Image 1 (tube, rainbow, N blue to C red):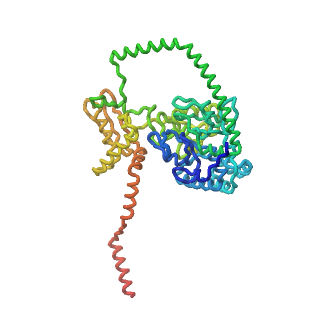
Image 2: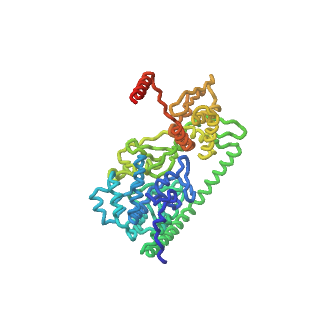
Image 3: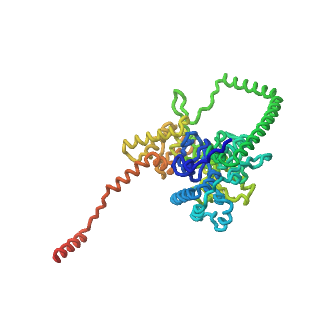
Length: 524
């Protein structure tokens, strides 16, 4: 096999910002982006799409350490400039991107000097970037130090990557190793094979090969040897898979008779149910064909297992937004906070119990340091009118709901009465409350809320007054920015340009000014 050409510096440009990649992340489709470019392109309400190929995904990837270290060693001056630019922008917002172990940005001969000067510590970023900028570029990639695969198999040693797939935690494994040891899709219990990580493997299917990283490996002097070793491992894995499959088929044949009897019994029960005319329970808020909506307050209460926490992601697996139970650390001091989804919460707590102080801190998606002993509390879902619409119309996706909200707001703008966001929310909630059965007096009370909307309360027969809706100020502010951000900025600029400040003098000041003018004339 002829040696391939290595990627040039132009190949390391982000497709979104068109600048050199900064803290690169690799999507499930194999495309590479800057960390912040990927984050800003994601949908805060539902699944996102790759900016390049439009492949859907739900998890914000962590920084790919192999590519991050490779760029620092191969293009130290250019990469130091990008890291410095990114850090300056982050200081303005107070939100910071992950910072993989800085020592691996340098050749190992520089590690002692870096440690002695304390450049790996937080707060030393400026000196770290200056030190990196002064380094000479490495002519050949460190294949054994950076592009290693940790397969997590007892009979397979650590080796150089071939056809690398990058997991959501940022670590890379060979495609053949991933297919042999990891499972993907709903119900997967696989963890990253890297001993220092052990985060959940997420995604509907195995990630695609990162072609940019594969080009680096193919251009190395040891590429042919790496390819042959990968072929041998793949062949051995295929033989093991065939053996396991044959054993499973033998076990299934032993239980076929019992399974057929159970299946026949289930079919008889299903047939009896159909004859009796049993129907499945409709979705909450669904309107029967030819009938009117029958909405109960219990249906409007959010289900914590399906609730969408708009614009909040998990700092372990990166799912964004979190759907279902959400836990928040009350001790992490970072502005972004530290949140976990229900699936990752138990895993992180178990790791702290298992390893204790040896584990140190778990780094969040935005460089938070979540440590053993930090307290987590569950965040109970608080719905806004977006969630109410989602509950009432389960057949609509979030984008269709957003379009409906936009139509309501535009209609209110044309009317010109009151705040469009608040009025649209009130109209949507009123439509729902019209279908609620009132109490004996028929009273439906409404009182002013504190979050930019109204708290609507409905009294029902045989029960206390229930809070049906509580407006969420942050979510409404987000909707306002998405729908009218540009218009508001233009209006403010026009007002600033058109406003002329006029000062009116009191009678005493006018007399003093007139006296001063007279003195000036007399002097002339």
